[in-house]
Image (cartoon, rainbow, N blue to C red; front, side):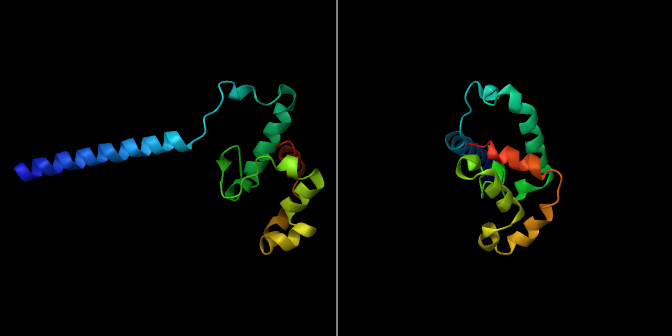
Length: 130
């Protein structure tokens, strides 16, 4: 009976240590949002941004890309509007022009979005990401 009690205490203590370390890791490695995080985007652009954000998610862009921490962090698009103009963003989104070579096999998969009616909303949304 004494061994079983010690084993239970050891298991409980180990669980507490693991949870504490996980919480500390999460606290240290996740960015903190400013107190006025909701007021970051201007109100006039909120409807267009929301439409673009929704289209971005509906077109499954989040499978490979992320914006503001939402989606796959392997390929972040934060600030893409400051690096590329709208035409370049469109080319990368549909795998066209010079982007076709750089994308390789992904260009064919992206080309299916060329005629998608939501494409303009996504391009506008990405162009505003600065």
